[in-house]
Length: 319
Image (cartoon, rainbow, N blue to C red):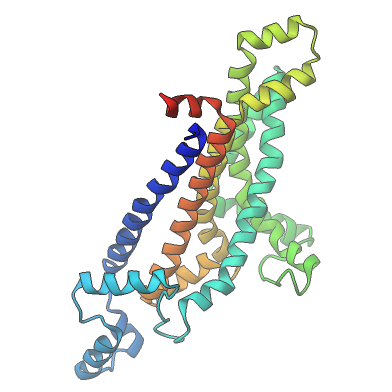
């Protein structure tokens, strides 16, 4: 079997127990949240008989192992349960909110890559004031909390300049221009810190590659600096950049929870926070499970791409 194909098969098979363990963790963690969801749904005036009846209808009077098995079996068939309050299916709620979260995270990651990778290459190829300036940007962008940066951006671009709306949402299919206007501030807030991480990783990877002996050989052959940097060094430095990009994409999914609530975006993050305040654990566990599965899927894709880019992976598997 081809080394890369064997590596990919191993990574896919390893993902299955990880997904199974994640489902157990999500199921048990939600049960540890204080409060009775049935009492919250019915109100404080509900009688014990009514509470017992509703618990029986929802299957909450069954043992945990039975509840988990029923939930997992239904989840594998695409049924994540029903909202206790609105009585809508969780899949219907997620089908509305998930595209918003994905749009936010994908645009933020694209902006972080567009900023971080070129700046990292330039800083690695040059020294002096550019490197010192990049160090200041990295330290500042990583240190500033996302929620504080978002508030500052609202004060500047909405309160002072009156250029962008502070909150709200319009679907891209309804009004593309207005949709992008609403997304500018959330995307900038999420992308700033991630671009610093990618810049730092790109700079470190490029500096290590540019110090290799074969780079000195290419210079001795008379190749132009631009060709050495972009055709040879960047390709051999792509492994760490791809890995960090995949990890930071998962971080963006988590950070979207705060940003969506800050900018009133009706995404999965806001859906989960609202469900937590209502003790609506079915929505919480469905949303958390989907976000966790997305994170695992992104990491799987990252590993597969890394295996394609790095020839040492095939050599290691073949041994």
